[in-house]
Length: 176
Image (cartoon, rainbow, N blue to C red):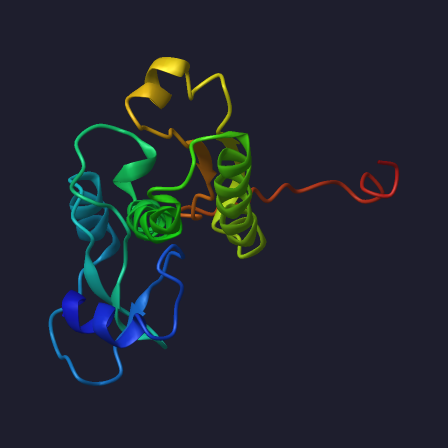
């Protein structure tokens, strides 16, 4: 079911956005209660469950990554895969170019443009691109290498919503 959901949704969603896969009547299965879903999710299994008004739902976005990191969520892992592909395409025209300040500035600008677009699309909070003499040392240049160092802060998805409800006596709220 998850593969079918991904196939249907991949045309409509950015790869780096979190998504719930709502069934469109094609699958019939058992429903899990909240406790069963919680146990599965704690064990890094995204439960497929029935939600009233929505039908069957892929209710989770964990990966099988070991240990806590940004890569243990599907949206971040897919963002990294997407970025690696885009950056590889971006870098190809610079192969065999002169390894000088002009080339370094151009490739840095191209990468920043790509990343800035992802900030606008809510995939990244922030980023840093370095491509200058600090990471392109004379010895790297002599080995015909160009380094483009990139650090990203991916946007994380909401997995839990907490809504504390406080009761106040008459007139207390107006005095706040």
